Image 1 (cartoon, rainbow, N blue to C red):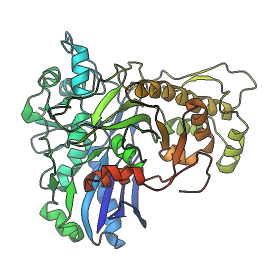
Image 2: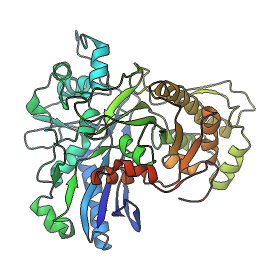
Image 3: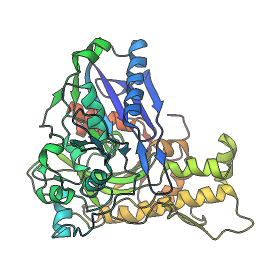
Length: 458
C-alpha cells in the first residue's frame, strides 16, 4: 500500500508518496513554489486558480515518474484560517485570504460575542481578524458580485478535484465558527459572521472518504480507486509528524511561520479541558484537540534578513552565527507580520533596538531569531500550566532543519526543559497520513528525532 500526501502550504504546494507506515518513499516528491502576495496594508493572499494549477502540475509530475502506482489513500495537510468567496459556479470572487492577512475589520456597530470567555472556551477562538467571524462580513462587503458560499483553500482545491469535498472537523475548527465539543457550526459565531448554513461548507462525518471526479480519474487513472481522507490542519499534522501526540511532548514548529502546540485526547461530545485566555484550541480529528499559540514570523524572518541585509551564504553564514552567543542577542521584536490571535498588533510591528555602528547584519538576524524563541518560551509556560508535568519539546519544520544556531537558541530559551529535534522536513505529510490511517498514537514512534546539535542532512 502507498499513500499520496498533499501539503497545501503558504509558500509551496507539495505532493509526495509514503509507504503504509507513513514513511516517505525516496525520490517520490513533487514541489511547486507559490506566490504569496503581501502588501504594506496587511494583505497576505494567494491566487486560487494558480494554486490549483501548481497542485495539478505536482500530480502530473508524480504520475509521469511512475510514483502513483498502488496509491490506496490520499491524505492532505492544509493551512488553517484561509478563506475565499465563491460564486454560484464555485469560481473564486477574489484571491484566497491566508492566515497572514490582517486587513479584516469588524462591521460598524458590531459588538462581538455576548460572553467572550464562554465563546472562547466553546470555539477555541476569538472574535478576531484571523477568523471567519470577522473575515466573512469584510469579504462580502468587498466582493463585486453576490457571494454564493465561502470555502477554505483546501475545500476550493479539493472541491475542484473530487466529486464532493466537505470540510473536515480539523479545518472547520480553524475558522472560529465550530463548536469544538458538539462538532456543529456555532450559532453565535455564525451570527457574528452574518452567514447562513448554506453559505458554509458541509461538515465531513467521521470516516468520510472522497473520490476523484471522472474527468480527473481519466487524467490520473492510478488514483481512480484511491480514497481521499478529510484534510488535517497543518499545525495538527506537524505535531503528529514531530512525534508529539499527547501532553508529554510539545511541538515547536518553525516553517514560514511558527507555533507551539500540544495534543490531548478529547473525543467528540466529551467535556473540553479549561482553555487559558491567551491560547487557541482546534481539532485534530473527532478524537483529539490541539492547543497552542502561533506567530506570523518564522522562517520568513530569515528570508527577509537574507534578502534585505545581504547576509553571507551557506557555510559562511553558519560560521558567522556560531560566533554570536544564542543567549546574548540584541533586543528585537520579530512581529514583522503583526500578531496572530488574540493579539492585535498590525503588520509592521517588528523592531530592531540597540543598534550601533558595530552591529552586524548577522547579529540583527540572530536577534530576530532569538526574539521569537523568547516569545515561544513564554507561551509554552502557559500551555504547560494545563498539563500534569512540564513537557519535553520537539523542534521541527524547515527552518529548524536549516539552522543549528536557531535550534541552540531555542535550547537556551526553553531551559531546563529537554529539547530534541525532528530532522525530517516532511512532518506535515507524515502527520496527515497517520491521521488518515487512524493511527495518531503511532506518531509517538516516528523516526528522525535526535539531538538539537546534529548537523546531518534530513
